[in-house]
Image 1: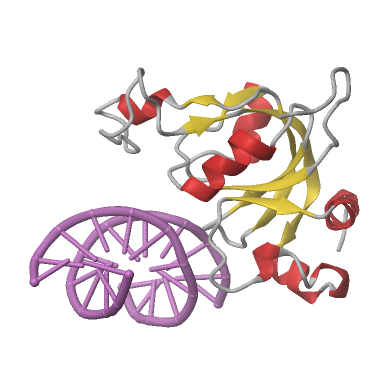
Image 2: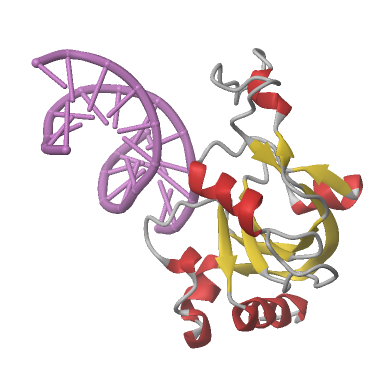
Length: 165
DNA sequence: GCCAACGTTGGC
DNA sequence: GCCAACGTTGGC
């Protein structure tokens, strides 16, 4: 958006939530790449549309899980494009306001990068001083696509790559 | 299963 | 434009 030609956007980091019973890191490992459909929140949509770039790295977070936490890493593999599940009447995320002519909801493709040998659980994240400011630790912070600090991203990754906590 | 914290909707 | 009611998210 308005960048000088030939200048790549600065790489950013994100956290994306998925209920593992719905779609887990193992599913993404099997599929390799998958459209991240079903986002029905304007703030999350705007992040995908305006701020994400191909190649950005993503903490894959298992929500509504026991325990919840970061299960691995993925990367953004496409620009935002219309989420066609919004105009599929049979889809659980159907929204009659969205049409092929006038799509309301967008998605990006997400590609598998790695699964952590050690899931970095939410309690562990909360215990870690250096991660105190992460959005995901805030009570009631429900945004399903959220920005992550580079330093926080690297810290989580190093925790996840450790076999034992 | 409970419920707090949000976001959205709709009456006025 | 206010705000109560309702639906959803997601930790616990």
